[in-house]
Image 1 (cartoon, rainbow, N blue to C red):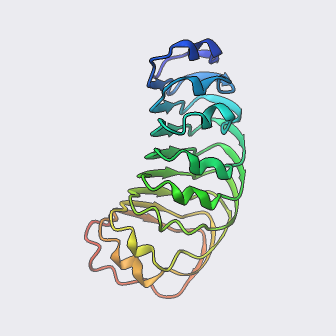
Image 2 (tube, helix red, strand yellow; image 1 turned 180 degrees about the horizontal axis):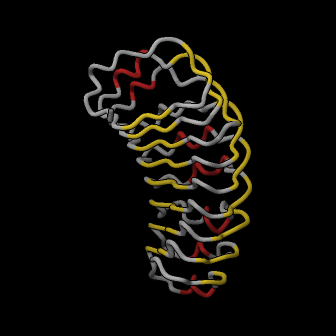
Image 3 (cartoon, rainbow, N blue to C red; image 1 turned 90 degrees about the vertical axis):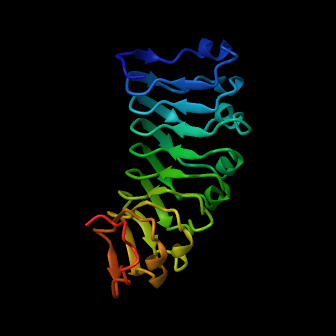
Amino acid sequence: MSNNLVGALPNEITLLSDVVVLNVFNNRITGSLPADIGRLPLRVLDIEMNSFAGPLFTDGLFMLNSTLEKLRASNNDFTGSIPPTIGTLSQLTEFWVASNDFTGPIPIEITTLENLKLLYLNDNGFVGELFDFTPLVQLEDLFLSGNPGITGAIPTNIGVLTILERLQLNDMTLTGAIPASFSDLTALKMFRAFNNQLTGPIPELTKMTNLSK
């Protein structure tokens, strides 16, 4: 948790074989993830708000494919891209990698993570066409904003995400119209889509009684 821890996270921490939650949120830890992080039976890895650098998606991380439920790594200095093997982390319910230096396209394999509830990819350097995120029907939060290299249109069947509460698509390069099925997002509380190139009419909003004014 929040302290003033500095330096690298020692590889010896992976000898604590019963640790299922590793939380070093909001410190000043630098360096890379321990090479043997996959030795731990982690369900939660929270390294958010530090100064970790280098690759996040290492062989060691993917050794957690049968246990890891929450990966929170936002607000660091991680680089590289998200590999297609992200789809092997099949237990993930939370995937936070916002505010890093990731580049490249967002792999379509991310949509196989059918348990995802919170997906934060905002404020990176992702590029390419917006992936069809509608298979992720358990989503409650989806933040893709602050990736101006992402182009394309909002999926026409976005209305299938019936429990989605927060959607951030601002500061991208999206085109086309907001789909009519947007009106079916009746659980939506927050929607941001400014600084894009969207056109056309605004869908009917009368059913969206939870949407903040």
